[in-house]
Amino acid sequence: MSADRAPLQRALERGEEEGGPIEFKTRLTRDTHLVEGRMESLAAQLRHRVLSGDGEATYVVGVDDDGAIAGISPDAFSESMDVLSLLAEDADAHIEDVETWGIEEQSSSGNRTSSGEVGDGLVGVATVREGAMLETDDDEHVVVGTAGHVDHGKSTLVGTLVTGERDDGRGGTRSFLDVQPHEVERGLSADLSYAVYGFDDDGPVRMDNPHRKTDRARVVREADRLVSFVDTVGHEPWLRTTIRGLVGQKLDYGLLAVAADDGPTKTTREHLGILLATELPTMVAITKTDAVNSERVEEVETEVEAMLREVGETPLPTERYGVDAAIEEIGTTVPVLRTSAVGGDGLDDLDTLFEALPKRESDAAAPFRMYIDRSYSVTGVGAVASGTINAGTVEAGDELLLGPMSDGSFREVEVRSIEMHYHRVDKAQAGRIVGIALKGIEESEIERGMALLPREADPEPVREFEAEVVVLNHPTKIGEGYEPVVHLETLSEAAVFRPEGGRLLPGDNGRTSVRFKFRPYLVEEGQRFVFREGQSKGVGTVRSLDTR
Image (tube, rainbow, N blue to C red):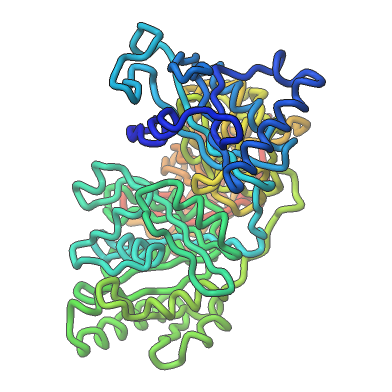
């Protein structure tokens, strides 16, 4: 729910007038407004409003014709948006943005709303824009996962990239990411956050006002090529969240931050291990080069190169070989760049890199599948499931299955709408980070680790599977009954291992059965996962399923 009532106040003060771009509607219903004849008339009216506003119209819903705020129920508001979306489509337009308020808010005249009851309903402002929803070619949408020790400047670097604003030296630009207020206050990330910028023929397309979600939507709308960032958590207690970000999202590249004033740490090495274990092409940004002298930068770069060679990787310092070589050889080498969010060092090189890096192979032609990373409820919309599309394509109106529930069953749901970085789209393909509004489910029933699938799918939830694993670190041996947490796609669940031969030693590559302790999940052959317990960790690949 938006706290800023300025858009509503402006619309009410301007009023609904003949030949103007503003339209008041108490509510819109399928039974009344989508019947033959009526729909055509309303679509023509919408088209007229859009043309009157030079390609943009404002629809105020929950308001009577005279401008009095009536307020309607969340379900009625949701139906109104569905109907308005269909009318817009018929008029060769689309809903660009929706903001809602509770009717306890005061009207522009300063008086209470006409309902007489506080919190009785909603009023909303929908911005309708001319033309179909623009689609960025999914081959031109790259997703980058960031990693690195706490306070090594990865979020600050991303915040500077997506806005073009230099940091103040205190990490101010990290607030430009999609983070929670308490994270900004403490200066520490506790969950995954997201950011986006892009490129067109004239160069980078960045956010002018990153605190406005409409500015993120503008970047998605205007850019020919998009770069989305999944920013993970550097603090050790939240390592499982970092693993979720690197394993559970369909990433194209990894970006590891190493601060020039600190150098590689134990956490740096652990994050690097996860990136490489998931076979993700990775680059290293040496950050905060403004905070130290050139000799220290050289020293840290040497430490980074040694760290990479220790794990069998070939470093490629762009200071010596140039960014073009990094573009050509990333994946077989690990580019190392010197950067400063304060001084601007290396930012042009990162722009050049992100503009040119190819999208990794996509599963857009496969059946739709998305593992849910988070869920939330939007006033007037309902339950929203968010995540990165693993495979296939999803469109508004699609009928899907959601699950498995704790008992192994799947629920039938329908896609109400789709948003990507606050930009509403008709459809989205594999690799896109989206929020999907769902009909037929309450937000409280959606859990991280569940999946969305086509209605015609016949999914079999899995409680146990066979896997091939590599033990990266363990103080003794892994024996029968070992209980780590398994991170597979977006799920994080305790599991019991039963290794072939009864044990696995550090460095071993072997087979084991893996059984989830508490409930089944959707698991498929070939999926990669990370397992962790205390300081122990390893990686694995699902080889066969037990669907009994």
